[in-house]
Image (cartoon, rainbow, N blue to C red; front, side, top):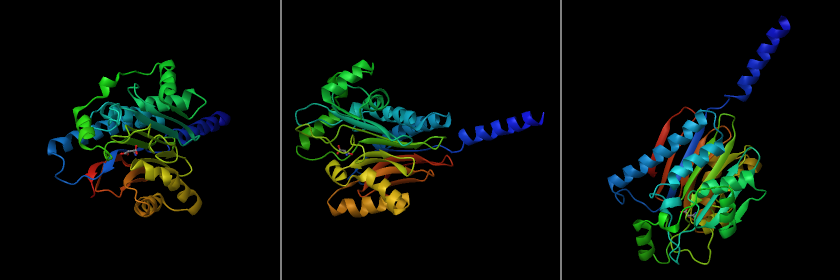
Length: 319
Ligand code: ASP
């Protein structure tokens, strides 16, 4: 009898250990850049905030019902990719040759597995491709036609280029020849109830990009990084500088090797290292205790978060 009593106690203790140790935490961004109060109409501001709210609420719901951080990231980013408001999926920017080419990446902080794709033109939700590369191939990074061939084998949803067309982005190409689009890349970082961290990023890159240009977003370590030892990070901004600064991994390395807190590490990179070489942008990050940091060196960054206490925060400008 005593044996059964001890056994039941042990089972209960074990359930507590493995199931609900952590409150889920999630943060998203929809790009950083030069945007000042008054630049956006109230209607557009509301539309953006509503979409951020819808996306983060969906991700949080998945985490609350014991979904993994990677699953939450895929579903959250899909909502942003399906919206014409962001430079990812449906609303992605035009290249110099008038095409739309997507980049995406995802990383699992539990096992350091990762997947990424670049230059795809017919994948409706590029984050699902990055996720499939991570889970169903022995590779990390696939490009262009090869990546699309793999996506078809995985039965991912295909879309024609017309689907991605928006007047807004087409006008940007016409007006902004040779300049960068500074808004709209999307990203998500999450911690699930098992304490596993993950990060994902999806983008159309920069307006008017040419020669098969690739930015930081699909590059593991530059635009996206996750490691349960330290943190999960998704970046947005001038990709060339984020690549040269290896921003996402640098945050993790500063925590791991220099014992900086997440906040200190992000401050050092976003406000010191990156601007010292001319880089602008921001990032969202969660550390392995569930602390959230959303910081940027531009006037604004579309962002939202839900912390350990379930408190939601949605913002655009510097507060
Ligand atoms: N980082 C992205 C890129 O360089 C653009 C952005 O985040 O706005 O492709």
